[in-house]
Length: 159
Ligand code: FES
Image (tube, rainbow, N blue to C red; front, side, top):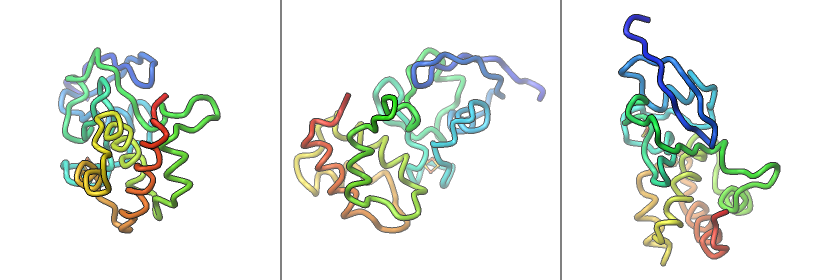
């Protein structure tokens, strides 16, 4: 397309050169240019959290940021959490606690949970609910999500 540009993104430890338009969101670059479709597109306007990824360890909604602005940053998507065939503790606890139904919000919930735990916002159920409130779940699995985050936090859930 006219005005396409080549940029370099570091995703899950791998550096890749991709061609995007200046207005391409990080979300679309991940899904459409890098085939990393684990990151979900829900609302595409910052309201649902399905597109949450980590950028330099901080959670962001990837539909609200442009790919060109994230060159040089270290991006982690849900595909980058497992180590070989060992799931990340947060992934394990989401399964153990049935913290999803349709799964549409789950990658975003999990990425947000990883950051929430790292930020230390897991002192109580209320605190978890508050700091996970940017991630909506249409199936209303909230109690199970809170239970999963709490359990993962208790395990000191990071690699
Ligand atoms: Fe980004 Fe909904 S798709 S917040």
